[in-house]
Image (cartoon, rainbow, N blue to C red; front, side, top):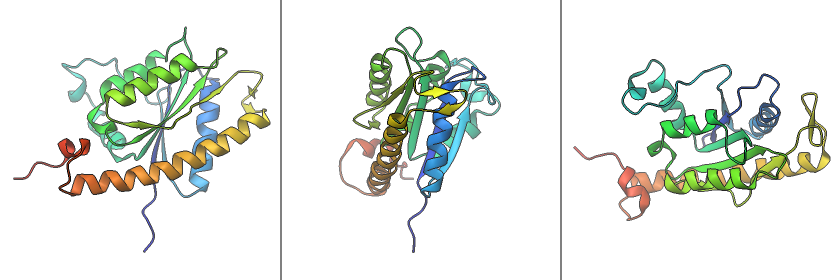
Length: 200
């Protein structure tokens, strides 16, 4: 019996129509599909997400469906432009909506930046840590014109790095997904114990 497909949620954290973040996210999503993953792309240009309000967000139309998509994911690809050394408002808004659903999962980060995206990558890792998620030990950063131009990836170096990134997200995402399920269904102590279904 074959292993179930790895579920990947690819989040496009840019609202720009010609976003290079979207180009790279779509490239990675296509590559992961070719490698047997089930990929769900969440693009806020096509699926606007209301500004997070803890008093009302959970009752808004579409929230339960989005929560189910996040909950189903084993790997969460986070693609964002670098705005003034920080992640985009659209990405931060998405992350504000969830935390419980991220626990034990793998975050893989993609940053469009003219400054290497280091602070943005660190901020995304901080969110992952606060939500008890894992991250790859590196992120992808790239630049408009140099790496992505006219909607195409033009850098061979970026192509090679994305191949490595896709492989690592799939391999380590699978390992973590398997362990997360074991921890949720087992009795051993560990940080995932708090996320086990309540016994009735």
